[in-house]
Image 1: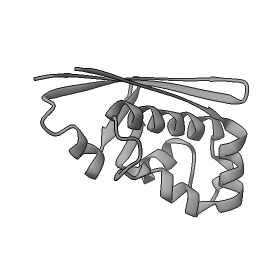
Image 2: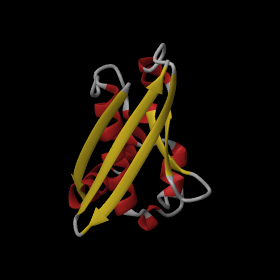
Image 3: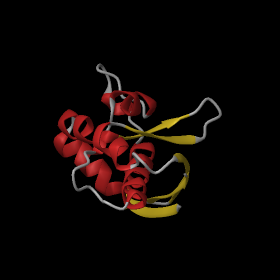
Length: 130
C-alpha cells in the first residue's frame, strides 16, 4: 500500500498565529522537541524560525492526508516531525495517529519539506507492506 499527502503553507499565516497566540499556539500544534528544533526556549521565543514552524505545519498536514483521516480524531501533537542527525525530516506518530496505521504491516515514511519565498510545502509518502 502506498499513500500520499501534500500541503502548502503561507508562512506569514504561521507568524501571525505565533504573534497572536504565543505559547498557547505552539503547545497546541508542536511537541516540545519540535519547538526546540525550531529555536524556541523558555527565555527567548524571538529566535523561533517561522520557516521551520511552517515547514513542520505543512508536513503534519501532508502526513494527516496520507493517513487518510485528516484531523478527525488526531491532534497536531500526535504527528511529530523531527530532524535525524543527517538533517533529513522524519515522521513520528503518537497516540491516535499511531493507531491509524495499526494492522497495516511494516510502514515507512518518506518526507520532503521545501521553502520558497513566503511558502513552505511538504510531501509525505507512506509505504506499507504486509
